[in-house]
Amino acid sequence: MKVDGQPYRSIWVDPDGSTVRVIDQTRLPWAFETAALRTLDDAAHAIRAMLVRGAPLIGATAAYGLCLAARADASLPGLERAAALLNATRPTAVNLAWALARMMARLRGCGERERVETAYAEAARIADEDAAQCEAIGRHGAALIAAAAGARPGRVNLLTHCNAGWLATVDWGTALAPIYVAHERGLDVHVWVDETRPRNQGAALTAWELGRHGVPHTVIADNAGGHLMQHGRVDLAIVGADRVAANGDVANKIGTYLKALAAHDNGVPFHVAVPSSTIDWSLASGRDIPIEERSGQEVAIVSGRTESGAIAAVRITPETSPTANPAFDVTPARLVSGLVTERGCCAATRAGLRALFPDAAHAEPA
Ligand code: MRU
Picture 1: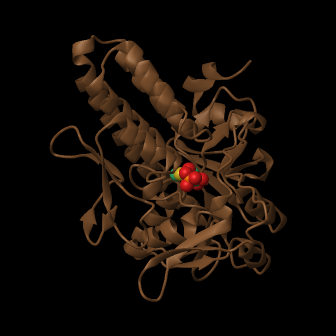
Picture 2 (picture 1 turned 180 degrees about the vertical axis):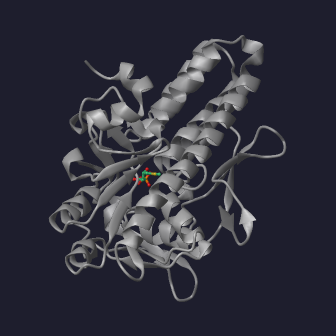
């Protein structure tokens, strides 16, 4: 996607052929800065400290993290240690373990002297495939938006939670890809952007992305969605996911479940857009999806730009009040109207997923 007219991906390799570069998402929307990753520890830090975030981008960064690790130590024990370190950075997005398993399978199959080159080639394939899959999700999902547009006069109002745009993937995004495609096809779309407390990925990142691309949008407090749905002001809700279980249960940013409940109560279609790398075929249901618990400081302290232009952090809770910060929740499949994948749309059911991905069914639990 473009930033000020210049095409960008969220991760790339510098012309020196080895340094990995990412957009530092902790600096957005105030500054567009890139960060250079030169070592395994740089990559692990970028994921842990959320310079990069979003399930597909976490996976791609981990893949490149193994490339950087291989430059320092291409032995198999060294790479296994590096993979374990990267795998421990964040627990919920399955793309992380998926990308590491794919990289390690490739690296185990080649000699030590070829490993650096093989690693960069495989990481590039993972990145390219993600961009292509998200573009396909955009085409399939745009048909849903076009159908909503055809069913009513005027503007189509969409609602999204967190950031599932191109910043969260390698390019295009998952939930936002259909919106970009619909917008480019000339449909009159408007997006309600949940602020997404506590880290404000919606207010900071989704709003920035949509604004840079010229897509009409409005940032709302997280609690506004139910009210807007009750008043017929949301035609379609679309979100991404960090992990989809084999039965269609969906883990996504905390607060997604409440939006799905409100959508269900108000007859608003609630779609989840995911590349197949986000489907965890080994989990029978969402009950076993690990939910990341993050620091309560993210709840107690918010940062923003003051009138003087300085970035400041302020506490919004009493010093003595404890805080809790579960970062994801699980939306049961029965509340999901459909899944949008690179292969098309399907019901959020075991049968729906199997029909689209018959080749993956062998990985399912008995
Ligand atoms: O904590 P984050 O910002 O990594 O959480 C991201 C999300 O919850 C996204 O909705 C999800 O990863 C889908 S990204 C295409």
